[in-house]
Image 1: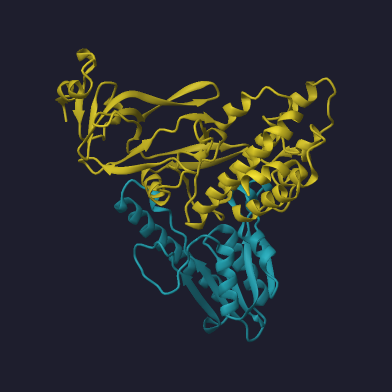
Image 2: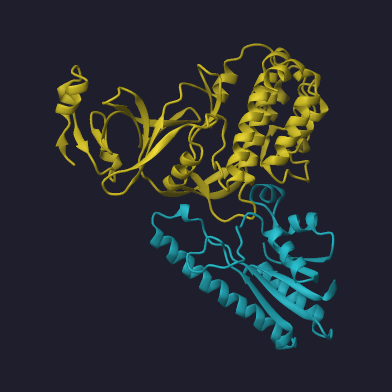
Length: 166
Length: 325
């Protein structure tokens, strides 16, 4: 497994931008590095909306926002001196997406397992993720991807970047 | 909409007072205006509204105008009918706040999934003339779990050795029912002590009310697990044990914050502190829902597995094992 083949889990949140910035600082002077920005699309449940039209509108808005932020994250890496050819993107669409069909999609049941699958498939030796400062109660009730990754990762390095924001 | 319901009511229920006969309703959108004496005509059947239902919360009645108790005139059977109502509101879960949504569509889907599975309430979905999603539910005659527990007057020690083993076995069945939902990528969404009914005749434990759902979370099933943990604490302690009760009892027990429940710091999770005869392995499961815990159950499947290990190994369950294996 190549430790310079880095997978950055990016979800458009502030902590994930911080993880991208941290990665850029760590690797900008490392030759032959390869960075993949992984975005696992999460769309709101249709159940939350009174009509299909309202749900689709919300999904459309979110997808545009996700892609805009992913492009911004890519820009951050490029502006740090990482060669454009060394930056990849992987956007895994939600299986419930009303817009696209894909052979590979995410059910949203476990983001950690999705990351783990992509890491194995792409032979990534390093995975980076941002972590929000959440309480133990929040972690239990709402889950924490970084905690799940810490438990499940055994085969590669995991960088958990603590967020400066709340 | 607006037709007088008197003729159809008297056809099936001649003694019904004429002055209370309302309208025949085919569009249920304005559910607030559907009241006692109105008849909802849904897919060819007539449902006479006999009551708007309420929910019991902290001793107060909270009216739910979208939920009606009805009598199906053609059969004489009573039903609970839930009319289409979407809402978003914030709820407190212990010390945390979260946005919660009411989704008729979700409940309909689950009703279809669990059709014939008596671990859950039963019912079907029909659409009114405007396409509103109306759920016609069978009434479960019985009592909520917390009320059933409150009615038990024996000491905890007697309860623990005589009633609890059967309740624990029933609880495992109820947890497996939730596991079934999760396996089908559904969540109950509102697991509470009063959403688990003990049916009078069969003594079956049955889940009700599936219309709550939540927004995006890293673990979509964790809230159900948290609810199940709360019920386990209630069952094991026979009732909720608070820090205040412990401090004011005749022989006060020394407790720390680590003994209390996660997200509910007033509530004891370390039940063994009050009742020392609670076996370690059972208490350990309870402690997974305490502030002391750092490793949570990752799924309901894992939780069920721990409960089953207890059930198969602890002497207190010896007799129940014969009845529930």
